[in-house]
Image (cartoon, rainbow over all chains, first blue to last red; front, side, top):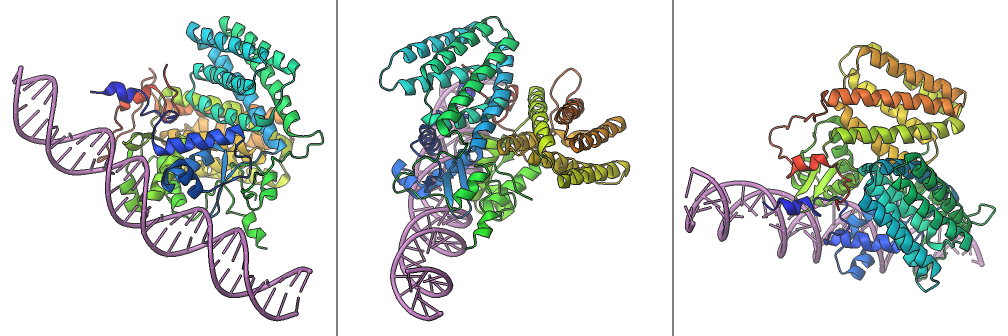
Length: 266
Length: 266
DNA sequence: GAGTCAATGATTGGATACAAAAAAGAGGAA
DNA sequence: TTCCTCTTTTTTGTATCCAATCATTGACTC
């Protein structure tokens, strides 16, 4: 009957635009983690989150569980949820995985992508160049949003839902880490050139070329992230704790492992 | 003080051995999905699950949310959770990702693995050969358990928690699909030989060799899975619906997409 | 007889209430 | 002063309750 409706948003498990309370909390908390408003180690109290968002604790708990599985949050039994922290090894791992998977996705996308998506990619690349050339306030935000859209569009074109899902989460992690990233002028220009080159590779449906450019692009981003997050000797950059937040118990220990997905020691 | 305790299980986000109600439900439902007791399309009612497990609906809902994010169940808004179904494209995607990632993990593991882990791998390989040679009842279960332990041990040795986590989920999916798999005698022997060869590669810390064997191993498994799950023309193998279960609404449609991680159509 | 519409029943999503565990703090002894 | 212990307080984890939504069934109309 109204099959059209069930065709659209509701059955979509990644209901980014869903209007229920759980999704509201999920989007809100995720956004704040990615933007850096909640730095690593921040205690996420279900009660205060529920109060500040005007919902009860039930959907908050479900949203935190989702964020935990996605790796942005750690949950300690009977102690609640904390924003995941990042070590240098974590940064390396995430970027190594992105290099491996996103270039793979790029190669598939190059073979399947249609003219509409290519046009959209070109438009996004142009908008990024405009934003980069215009030293206005909010430039970084605009660039981040456009860059995110560019990468996500490529992912959607690869036609592999699980790969897309995994990479969305890795890209989220990269964005958390890139909160403090500062691109030099040269690095910015190189990044723009990578985007242009990717569009050219897609126009020619050249999978090898597209994958290769993506690898270069991510290697460069990896270096920028490392430079902005860690000082040369490899010691950890600790985001300043905002007043009123409590550090995760046993945090210094936890850092030597990894957030959210640590394996058991034997 | 009791820092030792917080060192162990409690702060582990993948608390497989946790004793709270949510984890109990999670493990129970996950096990039934993987074992094939709940075939694709089975409706997972929060109420009946809560009743059968002796807990309330609250932890059941959280466990289902976790399984949804992990891709084993689909949640349709206001309609509840259903066990994810698998198309041939899904099988191909999962195995392609495993080939890419598990060989990568293997290469890292080969460089880091210690003598204890190698000994344990050799032991597991021997046990598998014994189990394979002994045509007793429960042989398939024993082989599945041992093989799972073998692969997971390699993953833990690679020292990359996120990669490990992602692969755990992909392996779970493979196990769901392999429920009905039947290895021929030749395929079984080849699989055993792969395990032996992997141990040899690890003993020599030869990353290229180890990664290469793992690729072969997974390609072979991919073919067996395809053969057992789908008939030659590529049409879908539908697991028999047990009496009393309701099919997911719009299921025929959903199958053309993918479970749990479908991307939005534009 | 087929199709449409409304009432009913079942099930989910969310809110609140309660019990248990952990963290924080006060107090006292060495 | 420092360390230990007991109490208080906060916060989590679970159970129960209520409202909203969806599927189903039956009656009604064309």
